[in-house]
Length: 283
Image 1 (cartoon, rainbow, N blue to C red):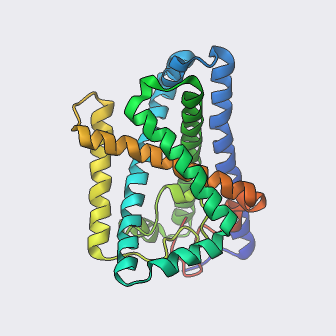
Image 2 (image 1 turned 135 degrees about the horizontal axis):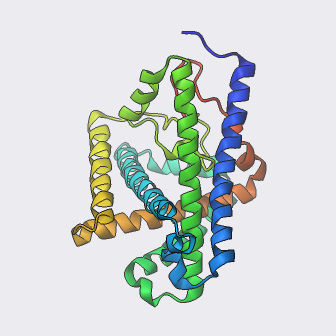
Image 3 (image 1 turned 120 degrees about the vertical axis):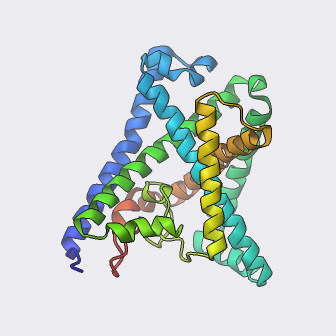
């Protein structure tokens, strides 16, 4: 199968980075416009569509939140599955040590500290959103904006990569990566910190893949039921909301990493190709 030249791949990656960061910035610009127009009342955080008088923006907020929570539920299952497998083999401590060495102690512990603080605030909002003080609601709202911006950049990057796959005649390989859970939507955005070009490194067992798809469809059902006002079991509703909070924790980690590695944070998308050398599409 013909591969793109090094120059063409470089141009594609640069274009993808520009599109991803432009989409990320666009979400923030809209948010700035909303609050410049309607202020910072706590009620506005849940009624931005009314401020813009736009059903489309209201739908986007619901859609972005659903994508974020769905992806997070699947990712958390994969994390628990892999951690359990490492623990059974007695390799978990070595893996954690490797992660610390790779990210740096400041990023690792600083990221975890920030993530735990944000997670605590998020769990507070899940348990008693009405009782949150304004400063806490503001932080939660900023976390939501980051979440929506990351989702937007991921979707833009996904569409771009899918277009490249079609152009190179690798559509089936691209879709197969999703089928075997070695690729994900969020890995196509500006927040991707890995060095594997979007791959998780290992595909996992049949049961792992089957379980991840099961969680995906469960999350989509919860999302769809909530959107249409259907009754969702309390436990599932809480799990879905906590998944959104977990997304905030990942964002807190990313912010620490981005502060410590600003150049890598800006150039991450442009430093990777949409296709591997073997021709299998990745992120």
